[in-house]
Image (tube, rainbow, N blue to C red; front, side):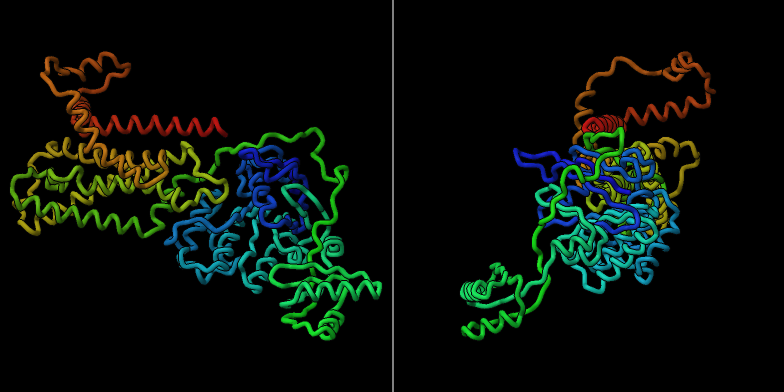
Length: 577
């Protein structure tokens, strides 16, 4: 049972609300049509029900508002517009990604592809799907959580009659199994043919709530559709002959030299045109829309359950994805951009390493990092930053989390998953870049050129610096893209560290040094509650050395600022909700 009570949208700029005190019910086991002309407030009403628009009122799904349902995707399935997703992701990959959002087993993806008839197109890219296939995929995504209620906004718009028949057959099957189905319609004839109950709205207000049989009897009536270049003359002739014969005939002038004649027949209108020499381009029997003529008295409208009252509707943060780490891994590995970008970074790093070694002046760590002095950052660090920027940037450009609740949530679980995955990718990219560069140097210049140092501890500080640089760049790109909602902003934040922050930091700390931090590990050991072994002092010194470096200090400063900005924007968003 779906109960919408007192839904009223927030008015904008002194305009009347798009939805005004709308109250109706959609019952289980029935397909309910929300009928209205374009601009009547149908889509706004659905968004109010799903708490995607601010306003007043309340919608109960089997007795509970949406924000009190632990797993909304398992109670309500929605299809509002096109299916969002990266255009190169496959249909199976998209549904598996949505499984992690809804918290259901990934095996549901293949099951739903079979249900909607897309099992043969499981490897088809989203960007190549036709409109009908896209709607099938959207319906599969709505059914992933096996919801009781389906809310669909004009799901058959633009589809062929064959696709229409399949779509409404599937929705009818869901209703026959006890589910609740609510669809919006613009065509009264289609609503009367498909639905069990028709709720008509106009100007955002309820004007009729009828069963389909009563709706067809009171709202739809037969008419004669006429197209003629002499529409005004023929209309006057038909009306005059009807008055002379004392018959009740109504002639309505339509756009484009067309007439709708109610209360007559094709034979009578054709004979009138023939007798008066009026040319006809079209003459056909149709079922016409008589307009919303049956209103629902206030006392007969469904009311709220006892003890409840309409509440303000506020946009609340989404609780998706329910499995953030699996979601982030599938998001990263589900598109070929990841592998192409990694291959490009490794190839560029190898080429730069060989060219840098040709000059013969760079030390081995800089050769393995492929970091010429002309570049602000080495290719691996830039690639890690771009991976981080894409982690949040793609959420806004090709949304997947916005499918149900309207925006990308600022959940700590999602942020933690993205930080962990981007850090792992950055470390892997850094290790692969160093390994590829080392092998390329050996291949081009021989083993003596790329020989490793004799002591392993000589690699500790450079290796730690290399790892910290790539992870820091990845996190800077991730946080900036999450704050500014764009991949370009994330990449700009990565480049700003060596180009802007490092010079400013150097200028701030340049000068004569009069004090030293020697002996800091011993003083920290005296202040700490836990006495760590002296062997850890070396690692502490390495960390302090990294932070003291200009790039390390700049990265630490940038990350601190970005983390604070991300948390502040998240708190402001929660305050608005």
